[in-house]
Length: 325
Figure 1 (cartoon, rainbow, N blue to C red):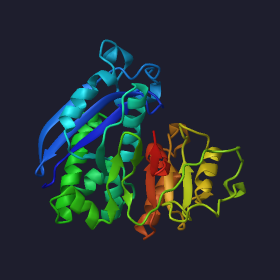
Figure 2: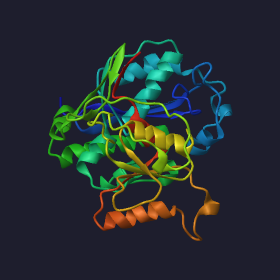
Figure 3: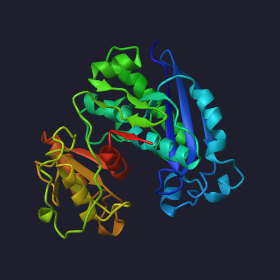
Figure 4: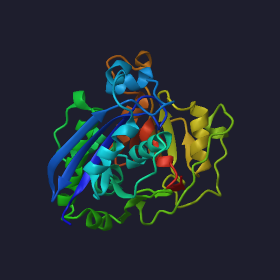
């Protein structure tokens, strides 16, 4: 079938992946956008509190969904819209983990579907500082409106347009063909397991939980026995800003567990900069980004291969490539 899929984007009410509160979907048939669907809803029972950080991101407040049905009540209509088409998402590891967790919390069996990730594809096509949605949209010449970012329908439309551009850029007209040309494999979700969209040369890795805190990155012992095919194995990782999900010493321990090397300062040998929440009071006058971020951009301009990612993308990148219900 010529390029046909449904691009999706979830928003969540809180830090739980089971707290889906909005879903945007954009349907592409034969390389053209033909339909869209958007719903806001109450998250599953027990996961329905709204945290200020999430509200600040997507502007959905409890009052907006107070009288809405819950996620599970919309699921049949979502499946009907998707039909038997593959799913595409930007950072699909996050969106599919939200889907799995929200279905679990709603006591609904996982569906059978295939999916691809425009963030994973971007890493194979574009040599850019960050592979987050705004940066990739710009690279794919897709018009971008910062004020609409995190509107689930808008983000799903941008994702769809990016996938269309990528297909044309690679002279393909089929999603499987596009993935094959990039040496990637389709992600799969079944009633009992999942397998992410990843490189064909990358084998399954493990998600290790953080252990005890340490004061300095240099004190963290790197797991030399970790799976050498993990995409972060041997990479040097630096953090800037405050992480929402964990303290920085725990983040150092987490990356070290998969064989990556945590460092505190940016150098030409840094491979990944993870950007957390920035404290405006700690930024230099007139600056909107940290010194580490600005240094990463300068180093890239000098030819260093450094990728910048946000916390959500970082956590999804570390998610296990496969798992079971």
